[in-house]
Image (cartoon, rainbow, N blue to C red; front, side):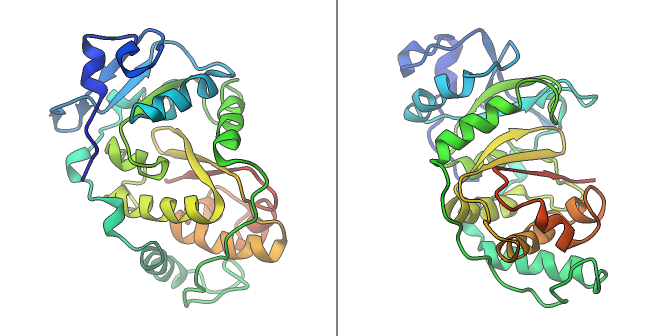
Length: 270
């Protein structure tokens, strides 16, 4: 995968990050992958649980240094990122993939077995991309707000830690660290990141949190009507069918109702 110059090695001798314009709390660099230690750090992770305001305080300065924030849940039974079997060497580059082509491929694979009430009002043919949403917040402000909502340990994440990742854009963060959460669904997460890039452009999403098999994004321009939400729900079904078939209301229409005005999207792969 193509990457930017990685500023993380500088933190080995400058753990506070002052040389990068940062004031980091105690933390550590992680280079552990499924195939052994990576040739350079994949991410920096805070040593303490994230608190409200942590994202806002470090997000903008980190971005200026070439690092993007993401919350990682280290409190689950699968441990933290050093235990997640990261595979950066197996990831392609998100920019090499077309989002609609990926979604159409996933839709056809999933919809062929679910023709009927589960995917109504759509059929087996890919319905196309949803129109762009209308922003209700600044994307980075919304990301900070959603990040704060994940710090109480009550919603999805048991123990969120702030991490910093060298990536071109927030949508690329999963591929940049070689995240394998959707491994049973897609073994090259860069293809899913291509979709996340498209959602960045159309809905102002930011990748806010990653667990072992969970992805959480903030949404600055969520669908405002049920009709708009159904078009977005079709993309979610293609992106992560488990959201509807195993971890949701069992129908695309029911799932869509939950998306209207919703500032947070989450995805879980079995």
